[in-house]
Amino acid sequence: MMAAVPRSSAQALAVNSDGDKPAASHPDKPKEDTRYRIGPGDVLAILVRKAPELSLESVRVDQQGMITIPMISGPITAACRTESELEKEIATLYLKYKTNPSVNVFVREFQARPVSVIGAVNQPGQWRMQRQVRLLELLSFAAGPGPNSGRLIQIIHTAGPDICAKDDDAADDVSKDLTVLRLNDTLKGVEGSNPFVHPGDIVSLPEADQVFVVGYVISPRAIPLKDKQITVSRAIAMAGGPQRDSKTDKIHVIRQTNDGEKKQDFLVSLKAIEKNEQEDLILLPNDIVEVPSSTGKVILHSLTGAVAPAITQLPLRTIP
Image: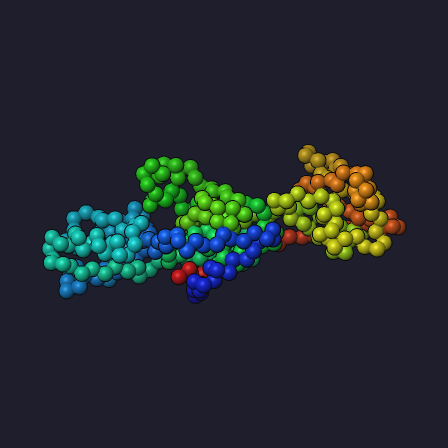
Protein backbone atom coordinates (compact mmCIF):
# COMPACT_ATOMS: atom_id res chain seq x y z
CA MET A 1 0.00 0.00 0.00
CA MET A 2 1.37 3.40 -0.99
CA ALA A 3 1.44 6.05 1.71
CA ALA A 4 0.45 9.60 0.73
CA VAL A 5 2.94 12.29 1.65
CA PRO A 6 1.32 15.38 3.25
CA ARG A 7 1.66 18.50 1.13
CA SER A 8 2.93 20.46 4.13
CA SER A 9 5.99 18.25 4.44
CA ALA A 10 7.49 20.03 1.45
CA GLN A 11 8.24 22.92 3.79
CA ALA A 12 10.45 20.76 6.01
CA LEU A 13 13.59 20.59 3.86
CA ALA A 14 16.55 20.27 6.18
CA VAL A 15 19.34 22.84 6.21
CA ASN A 16 22.46 21.32 4.75
CA SER A 17 25.66 20.86 6.70
CA ASP A 18 27.16 24.10 5.36
CA GLY A 19 24.26 26.11 6.80
CA ASP A 20 22.71 27.02 3.45
CA LYS A 21 18.95 27.44 3.42
CA PRO A 22 16.51 27.28 0.51
CA ALA A 23 15.66 30.69 -0.88
CA ALA A 24 12.51 32.28 0.50
CA SER A 25 9.50 32.45 -1.77
CA HIS A 26 8.56 35.84 -3.24
CA PRO A 27 4.96 36.92 -2.49
CA ASP A 28 4.75 38.95 -5.71
CA LYS A 29 5.81 36.01 -7.90
CA PRO A 30 2.98 34.52 -10.01
CA LYS A 31 1.67 31.25 -8.62
CA GLU A 32 3.23 28.31 -10.42
CA ASP A 33 0.97 25.86 -12.23
CA THR A 34 1.82 22.47 -10.74
CA ARG A 35 -1.34 20.70 -11.90
CA TYR A 36 -0.80 17.12 -13.00
CA ARG A 37 -0.40 16.66 -16.71
CA ILE A 38 -1.67 13.46 -18.23
CA GLY A 39 0.99 11.00 -19.30
CA PRO A 40 1.30 7.81 -21.36
CA GLY A 41 -0.21 4.82 -19.58
CA ASP A 42 -2.67 6.84 -17.49
CA VAL A 43 -6.25 5.60 -17.45
CA LEU A 44 -8.89 8.30 -17.89
CA ALA A 45 -12.62 8.48 -17.25
CA ILE A 46 -14.57 10.75 -19.62
CA LEU A 47 -18.12 11.75 -18.65
CA VAL A 48 -20.31 13.56 -21.17
CA ARG A 49 -23.41 14.70 -19.32
CA LYS A 50 -26.78 13.92 -20.97
CA ALA A 51 -24.91 11.80 -23.52
CA PRO A 52 -24.06 8.47 -21.86
CA GLU A 53 -23.32 6.94 -25.26
CA LEU A 54 -20.31 9.22 -25.54
CA SER A 55 -19.02 8.63 -22.01
CA LEU A 56 -16.07 6.32 -21.37
CA GLU A 57 -15.57 4.63 -18.01
CA SER A 58 -11.92 3.99 -18.75
CA VAL A 59 -9.63 4.79 -21.67
CA ARG A 60 -5.89 4.32 -21.56
CA VAL A 61 -3.49 6.92 -22.96
CA ASP A 62 -1.18 5.18 -25.42
CA GLN A 63 2.61 5.56 -25.46
CA GLN A 64 2.35 8.39 -27.99
CA GLY A 65 0.04 10.25 -25.61
CA MET A 66 -3.11 9.77 -27.69
CA ILE A 67 -6.67 8.55 -27.00
CA THR A 68 -9.66 7.80 -29.22
CA ILE A 69 -13.22 8.77 -28.31
CA PRO A 70 -16.64 7.95 -29.84
CA MET A 71 -17.78 9.83 -32.97
CA ILE A 72 -14.44 11.62 -33.40
CA SER A 73 -12.32 10.39 -36.27
CA GLY A 74 -8.66 9.92 -35.49
CA PRO A 75 -6.85 10.09 -32.15
CA ILE A 76 -6.63 13.23 -30.05
CA THR A 77 -3.76 14.32 -27.85
CA ALA A 78 -4.25 13.69 -24.13
CA ALA A 79 -0.67 13.68 -22.86
CA CYS A 80 0.82 16.90 -21.53
CA ARG A 81 -2.62 18.35 -20.87
CA THR A 82 -4.38 18.87 -17.57
CA GLU A 83 -7.79 17.31 -16.97
CA SER A 84 -9.52 20.66 -17.51
CA GLU A 85 -7.60 21.33 -20.73
CA LEU A 86 -8.62 17.96 -22.13
CA GLU A 87 -12.23 18.60 -21.06
CA LYS A 88 -12.31 21.80 -23.13
CA GLU A 89 -10.76 20.04 -26.15
CA ILE A 90 -13.30 17.21 -26.10
CA ALA A 91 -16.21 19.63 -25.53
CA THR A 92 -15.10 21.64 -28.56
CA LEU A 93 -14.96 18.51 -30.73
CA TYR A 94 -18.47 17.47 -29.64
CA LEU A 95 -19.99 20.86 -30.56
CA LYS A 96 -20.54 19.37 -33.97
CA TYR A 97 -23.01 16.89 -32.49
CA LYS A 98 -24.22 18.43 -29.22
CA THR A 99 -25.30 21.86 -28.02
CA ASN A 100 -23.10 23.11 -25.20
CA PRO A 101 -21.78 19.66 -24.28
CA SER A 102 -20.67 19.31 -20.65
CA VAL A 103 -17.54 17.15 -20.35
CA ASN A 104 -15.69 15.98 -17.26
CA VAL A 105 -12.31 14.21 -17.38
CA PHE A 106 -10.42 12.75 -14.46
CA VAL A 107 -7.49 10.37 -14.09
CA ARG A 108 -8.65 7.02 -12.72
CA GLU A 109 -5.21 5.42 -12.57
CA PHE A 110 -1.83 7.15 -12.46
CA GLN A 111 0.46 4.84 -14.41
CA ALA A 112 3.38 7.15 -15.03
CA ARG A 113 6.66 5.71 -13.73
CA PRO A 114 7.64 6.81 -10.20
CA VAL A 115 10.58 9.07 -9.47
CA SER A 116 13.35 7.72 -7.24
CA VAL A 117 15.71 9.46 -4.83
CA ILE A 118 18.84 7.54 -3.84
CA GLY A 119 22.26 8.18 -2.38
CA ALA A 120 23.16 10.58 0.43
CA VAL A 121 19.66 11.63 1.48
CA ASN A 122 17.99 11.02 4.82
CA GLN A 123 15.06 8.96 3.48
CA PRO A 124 15.68 7.36 0.06
CA GLY A 125 12.53 6.20 -1.69
CA GLN A 126 10.24 6.20 -4.71
CA TRP A 127 7.30 8.51 -5.29
CA ARG A 128 4.44 8.35 -7.78
CA MET A 129 3.54 11.90 -8.73
CA GLN A 130 -0.03 13.13 -9.04
CA ARG A 131 1.05 16.66 -9.92
CA GLN A 132 4.17 18.39 -11.21
CA VAL A 133 6.98 18.48 -8.67
CA ARG A 134 10.22 20.42 -8.73
CA LEU A 135 13.55 18.96 -7.63
CA LEU A 136 13.80 20.91 -4.36
CA GLU A 137 10.36 19.78 -3.24
CA LEU A 138 11.20 16.19 -4.12
CA LEU A 139 14.31 16.42 -1.94
CA SER A 140 12.09 17.59 0.92
CA PHE A 141 10.04 14.40 0.63
CA ALA A 142 13.34 12.51 1.00
CA ALA A 143 13.96 14.54 4.21
CA GLY A 144 16.74 16.55 2.61
CA PRO A 145 20.41 15.81 1.88
CA GLY A 146 22.26 13.72 4.42
CA PRO A 147 25.33 14.84 6.36
CA ASN A 148 27.66 13.02 3.92
CA SER A 149 26.12 14.41 0.75
CA GLY A 150 28.53 15.74 -1.83
CA ARG A 151 28.43 18.85 -3.95
CA LEU A 152 26.37 17.58 -6.86
CA ILE A 153 22.93 16.24 -7.75
CA GLN A 154 22.65 13.80 -10.64
CA ILE A 155 19.30 13.33 -12.39
CA ILE A 156 19.20 10.25 -14.61
CA HIS A 157 16.39 10.45 -17.15
CA THR A 158 15.44 6.82 -17.70
CA ALA A 159 12.23 7.56 -19.59
CA GLY A 160 14.03 9.09 -22.57
CA PRO A 161 13.08 12.41 -24.20
CA ASP A 162 10.14 14.35 -22.76
CA ILE A 163 7.16 14.04 -25.13
CA CYS A 164 5.85 17.33 -23.74
CA ALA A 165 8.97 19.24 -24.78
CA LYS A 166 8.79 21.73 -27.63
CA ASP A 167 9.93 20.49 -31.02
CA ASP A 168 13.11 22.58 -30.79
CA ASP A 169 13.99 20.99 -27.46
CA ALA A 170 13.05 17.41 -28.29
CA ALA A 171 16.11 16.72 -30.41
CA ASP A 172 18.35 18.04 -27.65
CA ASP A 173 16.63 15.89 -25.01
CA VAL A 174 17.62 12.69 -26.81
CA SER A 175 21.23 13.20 -25.74
CA LYS A 176 20.34 14.48 -22.27
CA ASP A 177 20.14 11.25 -20.32
CA LEU A 178 21.89 12.89 -17.37
CA THR A 179 21.52 16.30 -15.73
CA VAL A 180 24.13 17.42 -13.18
CA LEU A 181 23.40 20.32 -10.82
CA ARG A 182 25.18 21.86 -7.85
CA LEU A 183 23.43 20.92 -4.61
CA ASN A 184 23.94 24.34 -3.00
CA ASP A 185 22.48 26.08 -6.06
CA THR A 186 19.35 23.95 -5.80
CA LEU A 187 19.02 24.55 -2.06
CA LYS A 188 19.38 28.31 -2.60
CA GLY A 189 16.83 28.37 -5.41
CA VAL A 190 19.28 29.57 -8.06
CA GLU A 191 17.51 29.99 -11.37
CA GLY A 192 17.78 26.90 -13.56
CA SER A 193 18.84 24.68 -10.65
CA ASN A 194 15.36 23.60 -9.55
CA PRO A 195 13.74 21.94 -12.59
CA PHE A 196 10.60 19.84 -12.69
CA VAL A 197 11.32 16.14 -12.33
CA HIS A 198 9.72 13.74 -14.78
CA PRO A 199 8.27 10.23 -14.39
CA GLY A 200 11.05 7.66 -14.36
CA ASP A 201 13.74 10.12 -13.23
CA ILE A 202 16.32 8.82 -10.74
CA VAL A 203 17.69 11.59 -8.52
CA SER A 204 21.04 10.62 -7.01
CA LEU A 205 23.04 12.52 -4.42
CA PRO A 206 26.53 10.98 -4.46
CA GLU A 207 28.39 10.94 -1.18
CA ALA A 208 31.18 13.46 -0.83
CA ASP A 209 34.80 12.46 -1.10
CA GLN A 210 36.21 11.88 2.37
CA VAL A 211 39.33 12.25 4.45
CA PHE A 212 39.96 10.13 7.53
CA VAL A 213 41.24 11.23 10.91
CA VAL A 214 42.45 8.33 13.06
CA GLY A 215 44.62 7.64 16.07
CA TYR A 216 44.78 9.67 19.28
CA VAL A 217 41.99 12.18 18.67
CA ILE A 218 38.78 12.56 20.66
CA SER A 219 36.47 11.26 17.94
CA PRO A 220 38.14 9.44 15.00
CA ARG A 221 35.95 9.88 11.96
CA ALA A 222 35.53 10.26 8.23
CA ILE A 223 35.04 13.88 7.17
CA PRO A 224 33.19 14.64 3.92
CA LEU A 225 34.84 17.12 1.56
CA LYS A 226 32.26 19.63 0.43
CA ASP A 227 32.73 23.10 -1.05
CA LYS A 228 35.19 24.28 1.60
CA GLN A 229 38.79 23.14 1.72
CA ILE A 230 39.87 21.20 4.80
CA THR A 231 43.36 21.52 6.23
CA VAL A 232 45.10 19.20 8.67
CA SER A 233 44.46 21.43 11.68
CA ARG A 234 40.81 21.89 10.78
CA ALA A 235 40.30 18.15 10.24
CA ILE A 236 41.78 17.37 13.65
CA ALA A 237 39.57 20.01 15.24
CA MET A 238 36.51 18.48 13.53
CA ALA A 239 37.54 15.15 15.08
CA GLY A 240 37.32 16.70 18.54
CA GLY A 241 40.97 17.68 18.80
CA PRO A 242 43.98 15.67 19.94
CA GLN A 243 43.89 13.53 23.06
CA ARG A 244 46.08 14.26 26.06
CA ASP A 245 48.71 11.67 25.27
CA SER A 246 48.89 12.49 21.56
CA LYS A 247 52.09 13.57 19.82
CA THR A 248 51.04 16.59 17.79
CA ASP A 249 54.46 17.47 16.44
CA LYS A 250 54.70 14.32 14.30
CA ILE A 251 51.31 13.88 12.65
CA HIS A 252 51.33 11.67 9.58
CA VAL A 253 49.29 12.49 6.46
CA ILE A 254 49.18 9.39 4.27
CA ARG A 255 48.26 10.08 0.65
CA GLN A 256 47.70 7.56 -2.11
CA THR A 257 49.48 8.39 -5.35
CA ASN A 258 47.71 8.46 -8.71
CA ASP A 259 49.03 5.05 -9.73
CA GLY A 260 47.42 3.54 -6.61
CA GLU A 261 50.55 1.60 -5.69
CA LYS A 262 52.73 4.05 -3.78
CA LYS A 263 51.86 6.18 -0.79
CA GLN A 264 53.22 9.54 0.25
CA ASP A 265 53.76 10.26 3.93
CA PHE A 266 53.88 13.89 5.07
CA LEU A 267 54.96 14.86 8.59
CA VAL A 268 52.98 17.76 10.03
CA SER A 269 53.38 19.60 13.33
CA LEU A 270 50.41 21.44 14.85
CA LYS A 271 52.79 23.53 16.94
CA ALA A 272 54.70 24.60 13.83
CA ILE A 273 51.43 25.47 12.07
CA GLU A 274 50.32 27.60 15.02
CA LYS A 275 53.62 29.50 14.89
CA ASN A 276 53.36 29.90 11.08
CA GLU A 277 56.54 27.88 10.73
CA GLN A 278 54.84 25.24 8.57
CA GLU A 279 52.08 25.41 5.99
CA ASP A 280 48.73 23.95 7.08
CA LEU A 281 48.48 21.17 4.50
CA ILE A 282 45.24 21.10 2.46
CA LEU A 283 43.83 17.59 2.43
CA LEU A 284 42.86 15.72 -0.71
CA PRO A 285 40.24 12.96 -1.12
CA ASN A 286 41.10 9.74 0.74
CA ASP A 287 43.95 11.30 2.75
CA ILE A 288 44.47 9.65 6.15
CA VAL A 289 45.54 11.84 9.05
CA GLU A 290 47.19 9.73 11.78
CA VAL A 291 47.74 11.32 15.17
CA PRO A 292 50.20 9.14 17.14
CA SER A 293 50.47 8.83 20.92
CA SER A 294 53.37 10.22 22.91
CA THR A 295 54.63 6.63 23.21
CA GLY A 296 54.75 6.26 19.44
CA LYS A 297 51.73 3.99 19.10
CA VAL A 298 49.02 4.59 16.52
CA ILE A 299 45.50 3.21 16.67
CA LEU A 300 43.78 2.80 13.33
CA HIS A 301 40.00 2.83 13.63
CA SER A 302 37.97 1.19 10.91
CA LEU A 303 35.61 3.54 9.14
CA THR A 304 32.79 2.17 7.04
CA GLY A 305 30.06 3.82 5.01
CA ALA A 306 26.54 2.71 4.31
CA VAL A 307 25.67 1.64 0.78
CA ALA A 308 22.54 3.16 -0.70
CA PRO A 309 19.79 0.55 -1.02
CA ALA A 310 18.82 -0.75 -4.45
CA ILE A 311 15.94 1.09 -6.05
CA THR A 312 13.80 -2.02 -6.08
CA GLN A 313 14.06 -2.20 -2.29
CA LEU A 314 13.00 1.40 -1.71
CA PRO A 315 9.52 2.17 -0.38
CA LEU A 316 7.06 3.54 -2.93
CA ARG A 317 5.01 6.55 -1.87
CA THR A 318 2.61 8.98 -3.54
CA ILE A 319 2.95 12.75 -3.82
CA PRO A 320 -0.64 14.06 -3.74
